Image 1 (spheres, rainbow, N blue to C red):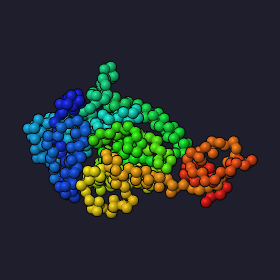
Image 2: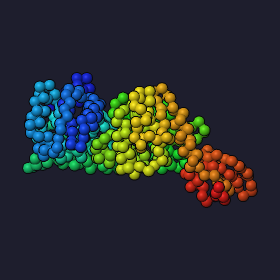
Image 3: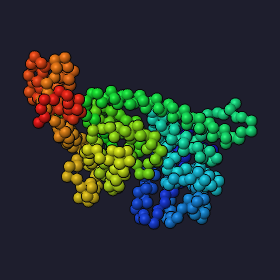
Image 4: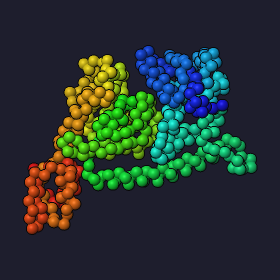
Length: 429
């Protein structure tokens, strides 16, 4: 038996029991927030939660993660409610999964596997498909002895591949290792192509911004509202996996490239952070970040903290950042109650649904771009019309005079353009 994707697609959802731990340092409210997020993940995966259980836990059991008595209780509940899957909010070791499956006769998975399953369903570009496939294979490798596994969908048939004296486990392990090697080689090629595209973009001297934030905060909706793009929007976690980049012309005439990135989440598996490093590098390479937060959620401060932790891990924690609170039309929180980090006088409050406050985002981006501009005087040779064109396109020309030796220009230009023109500068102001 395995988690049956076909029945889910036919809207006969498999029933799931959800199990979340409440450690001594957590209060009941925090545990319920974790549980609610797991319920949303399971709904996004396509299963139906029929029972949610919070387990107070002081020390994890090496055999079942929870104590034997609680494991029996969870098993009986699953049988009574006809649940096919038991889902833990915590990462289980391969041994714990195997032991619980043998005890319950049910498929037992953890939060890690749920997220992998969602990513596998929602990946569309070649790079994302390869990244998720690699993460799933590396996750599955130490779990090949489990009774319930996705590998029957992943590794294909093994007819004619088994050598003399080779066990089925060895065959499976070899097949998975071979596929991991192949996926890594394919990913290298795809990432080289992506790097080429990034280099081409960088030669345009157009400022770049990245939309970041917790999953389902409204990043894709904001991209659509600001650019008129058609990025996929859905009220589910991880609606966006692949980065979408669009050119935006600001009211003041500036042009920027704005990229929507994969949303963050608490306890995002590290192998997925690593797998999506090339996608998330958009945040590292961007000139500025727009951090989108859902103001209607009581856990908005924790979501801010989690996003900042991931950005720090990626090396983008010190990027210039515009803080944007979305969904003010749904807001039930008082902005006065926000913590000191979020009670920011420069923060923006918007609604992508009603379009309230969108002009303030444009204004803040233009303010950022103008702040980083430099006023310079240059002498451009007559044969470098490409540089003159770039100055007119990307900067603001204050004075221009044509001379025999070239064009004398005084202009305000972005740092990117300034760096390309250093050898032609006659005066900095």
